[in-house]
Amino acid sequence: MNLIFDLDGTLIDSRLRLYHLFQQLVPASKLSHESYWAFKQDKVSNENILASEFGFDAAAIERFVADWLERIEAPEFLALDKNFPCMHEALDRLSKRARLHVCTARQHLQPAVDQLDRLGLLPYFDSVMVTEQSRGKEELIASVSSLGPQDWILGDTGKDIQVGQALGIKTCAVLSGFLSEKSLRPYGPDLILPAAADFRLLDDLG
Image 1 (tube, rainbow, N blue to C red):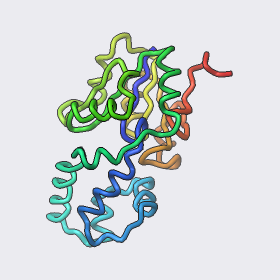
Image 2: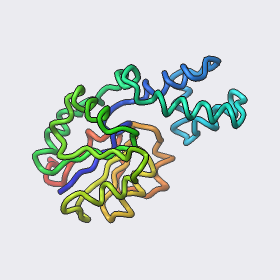
Image 3: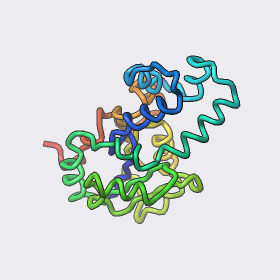
Image 4: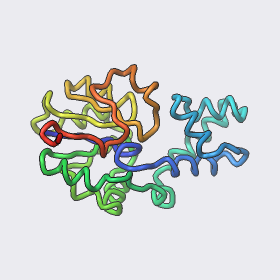
């Protein structure tokens, strides 16, 4: 069996990184961490926040997006990420019963691998797949050996659910990341959990 995990918001808590970068790029922002994430969980994009809350025009939004992409994976921001509670215990348990993989839409492979290593998660995974803005998650996951309907993808976005459905594998949405249950339920995941660490294989129950 294969279990494919998204990275940000699923395996690791990246909320502080994204909030601090937003605040750095928008010096006028007085948004609290909680208010920023309330927007995000309601599927309000950074672009819409900038336009509605700060009056950014199209050119200013374009500059913001370019700066965001340039800095979001910088070492000083990645250092803000941390493991979700009980993640080590969950991955250790699951890795004894299945092959674990990471698939993320990050821009660069090596910083993702280095971060997983720093957080002590890398040894649990058979592979780390990064789209690098050149390949889709669906294409990357389709290359996993023996992928089949018994396998799962776990992620915190609607896109993760859509990828799993397109590949004919089971889908688990987690509420630890960017979207609320209200935002995720319309995508029709097979399972919704508070966090990836709560995932259990059937023979693990009890």
